[in-house]
Image (cartoon, rainbow, N blue to C red):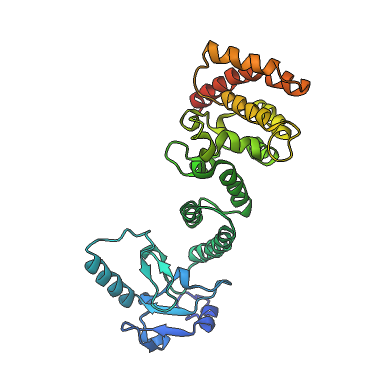
Length: 309
């Protein structure tokens, strides 16, 4: 008996085929599977359903012709990863890289699973309140595979709520720093525990008005000890503060000096300490009087951070 099965035809049905509702030929007309050569059968990744089913299989020659026509019309060669083209059936944007051979290989099935996860994350981004351009850039990060978990998304939202446009500004790039792992758990805890303090120090809408935005030590360069010290002042900030408004403003102004990436001259240092000694709240007075020591420490930590990265 011949036990060599190398040339035996595999008659096992392809389960993906039962999900296909339309086979589209070279002219975008409906066809049978047999009308499309095996090596020309493709699908568009963004067109898959939320549960990963492939509903439409195309003849690659039609999609190639559509792409060529648009590139000629726009007089440019579109990069492979740019979501420039629109699916004729679903109207969803896709890139050249989004065209995948059908039936999908195991590697493509992994891509499909990742794509479905990214859709769920993009839906979470849609629930966020914020600048459309910034949220759009977060979506691009999801599509690029930089953001793959809901936890990452939640932490990025915390950073965005704390720093505002510093997320993507060229001088700050907090999004890039987060993706590179520069934000540690204690930085996230700092933003959760002391959101008003963090905003006073790092939200550019506030710090640029105070002429500090361009000279502030990046949040991710602060040590754990510094973030704990700064967090202590949260009770004196915002609507729930038990100090007068002018004291709250003075406290915020002094805390900004801690993360000031420059030298504080003797005149400012002396005048600040003089005001601190006049504070009636003993706890606030004692804690705030340490500001210059923490300013020097924050600058040292920032220098060490730079030399270690």
